[in-house]
Image (cartoon, rainbow, N blue to C red):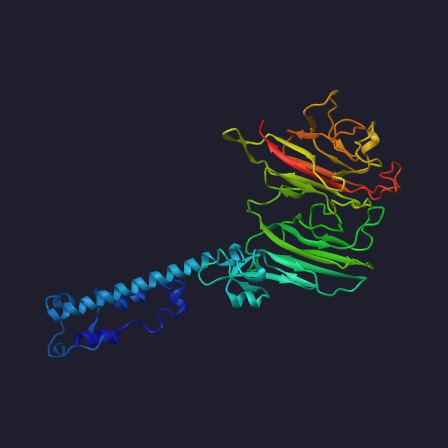
Length: 456
């Protein structure tokens, strides 16, 4: 009978599924229902011996009764069980709140199917589908979440999700434009943190080439809404990237590709990453490109190792390429790099350095006006090993990277000036300016440079 009485007592039928319990309603009600010190026999079916008593005994007076001890023990166990369920539910909810990808930007990498190695955010599959993403298996998603890869294969769409891929549509008409708007607002559920920068990765990008004056007059890509200088680009830019600085208030950034009349079929796939203001991956202010490794290769937009000598350099480029100071090895110990060195890439057929030059494999001419149109500025540059006579300079052009003037031997150029950065600047034409940048048979190509950070 005692056992039957306890079973009828049970747990509240709405305990786990009642939102008031889940989100922290005061537990005093539970305490009254279950705690032995608050036990009131009138709430439950009483044993028959209670009815025989002329005066009901208080709970403290019933402790010596064996039956009451058993009943009290059951009630204690039920109370403990409820506490455990309540505690586990609370812990589960806290975990779910902590892993909420809409507020914490949980990144993931797809591990299966044709989306393998693509990045996304961890989401429940129905939520992913609701927002237009493609749910797949991810390497870092837990608790039933999928890796949601958000792809947009069309024009005129609005993006609010981190790690979105903008894919060129299968068919796009000539003499038209295709744009994408990125909306940034910390009050959006999927952002929740202020976004300070966008990073664009051009995984695939091929539109029409510039004309002979380096102007993107047929097809072009431009950004509207960023606070830093973002040049108009065209041509082939696979593997390139850009950082877009954003205003502190809610804003939108428009990515726009204009398509003219060309035989080149426009193709692009651009990854859009949102960097919150407390991210460790933010680029320094004013940097369009930012490299975070001790060595690597940098190229200008539309540079390519090709035997052709038609112009590939782009007009009106004016931006900084920046490098994070890295830890490098020196013998058996690590040391913070103190020097950044640049050298020309090894190429098969192309020109690895081609700025304002009309003769192949020749550095800038003598005189201050020789690098006034298209050039790079590398502050504090010096040759390594030092050349004689010593001719320290920080502005370089021509078709060969060298400290010396009219040289035919390339040099490694280093600098100890921090922060490590390089300015790339071109004007708006090739042959109209007073100082012509090239001849009709040798179009400027831009540059491909190796970089390496070194200890002192």
